[in-house]
Length: 486
DNA sequence: ATGTGC
Image (cartoon, rainbow, N blue to C red; front, side, top):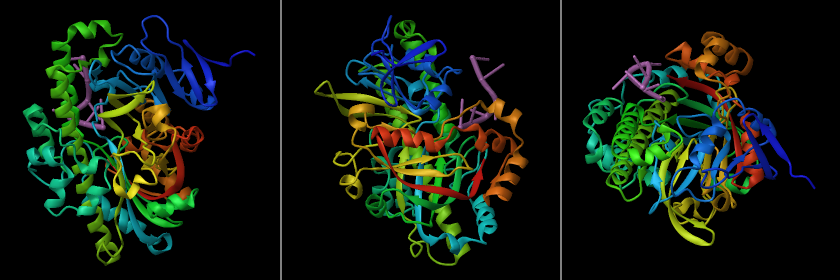
């Protein structure tokens, strides 16, 4: 029997089994690469640098098992967006490019007890009020002006709750309970702190958005019930990151690593993968600064949650508690974390890098909060603003296949520049409203063009692969009602 | 993604 292969331009992938493809280990690769995708999705990454970047990643010291590209992978800075790498936390390294510029870019889902027919007719008022109360776009704008950055960096959502921007239960429904105690504000540059000070509580630009959605499909009744999701329910999705703060932290440490660890850099195939050796002072410093940026991003999403609750109170004229606007979960899409994983029958501490990938721990994993320990964690995968999103549950196979991870979105099909040549923002908004009853309000028409539904892959296909592999199980699907963007 | 560059 001949082995099935896939010819992806410069690379030939070998099929391991359905939806699992291997980039064979050769030359100086330390491990093989793996792509988790259907053939349709594979075809969409043959013309960009995704596979080259996946291959480059396998050169990182201490990389375990294989470098992984998720079904939604596309090219990024150094390392694919939609990439996962587990690097030995003792003898390996940590790489800012494999975390991403937008540290802890992520998404949270806020539930309500409202049904779609209760908000129908209020879409325009809702979208205008959200747009007026949630700062969007490039540059400044904040829910909290001149914010106490040091406290936010140290305590994350805990700070926000103490200040009245949330409630105790928000903490239990956020990855890492809303803050990383390893955060070290002393390792963050003044420049980063200055940029963050007036951006606490702001959506930003690009693919970031706040979207009101309705639940349209339930695929797994028992899990949906545990998650508090039901047909026709209104939910809110908040997608944003650490703004200029995280960007500055990434920039600072890339430069610092290039200066301090030139020897390691010379051994790597790409300068964009610059890494600090595990155990070095710089690795510790970056980890502390990255954790601070993670806390900043969680606080950012918490402050936007606060604004959202207030807007709903005004539009629907009742307290948010009465509308049961509780968090389902807040998941990170761009992080590295010390986690213990089984590698060839041995427990090993790794820096798990997830860049454009979501943690997808199954039931039983000790990091999960009590609410989800027996069912598995919610995983939130946004599609484009025309497609809606999915809620999944961390799958049983994620620990053995992907260091406990799955996809994070639909994945881009084309560059932003290309998108602006293909689409005009106003037309995209008109089409969405007229054809799909989706109300979009944005700071910039160019951003809408960059994010037009047609620039994204088919999120249904991405999620189908995750479900088939058992790394993230499909629980529910949502469809957009209204959306605000930068 | 980003006070839209190296």
